[in-house]
Length: 262
Image 1: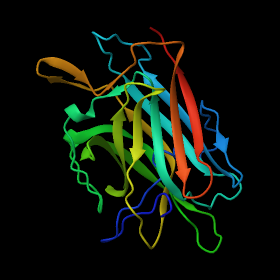
Image 2 (image 1 turned 135 degrees about the vertical axis):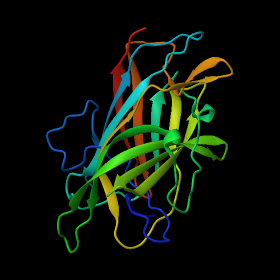
Image 3 (image 1 turned 180 degrees about the vertical axis):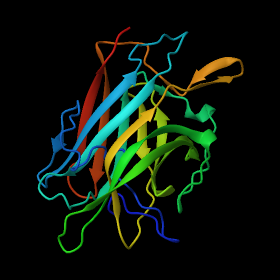
Image 4 (image 1 turned 60 degrees about the vertical axis):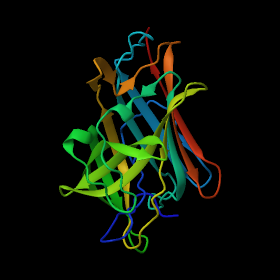
């Protein structure tokens, strides 16, 4: 496995970065998140904070569009220069949420190089901070990045989400997710990272992350379709979850809840 955040350089395959796992990294001291952090015996940790806007349930006849602000951070509380070696990342929205990405314009997903997406495919923006691992025990260095997410083409029968970190005005790192709606169980939408292999040379990790996907809709056959719709029910709060599975050892799972009203 490659370290989270490895960059694509030249013809090397694009690396897997810490996008949906990393939001407000070790350098983000003083920023409080709502969720309860989770850690393991190696010192790795993740935290999660999610905000839905508006946090109001819809109805079966009148689905309510909702925007999502997704913040998280990861790192190692023992050694900040250690990187995640992950197998897969899951982001989960609570039961009743629905993603209608398949009905919106989509960028062609590229698995062996950075995807080339247009403004028409864009669904979210944010800010990020990239960390370049220090050599010979030196501390990491940091660079500011812009985060842009796009609606992606189908992969194994599911729509995709393409997330790119922009550094120096150019896409530098990308992580792709499949998007699957669930009609039963505790989760309504599940995002699953798509393996993209690794690269050699320098490795880049996203250590600070703040993504907003605003409410978006379009007319399809005379009906208004929202990109993301809220559940039809509210029992006080909606639940969200972020899971990182490692090649070895138990996964790390962070959760957060958003108060809602009917």
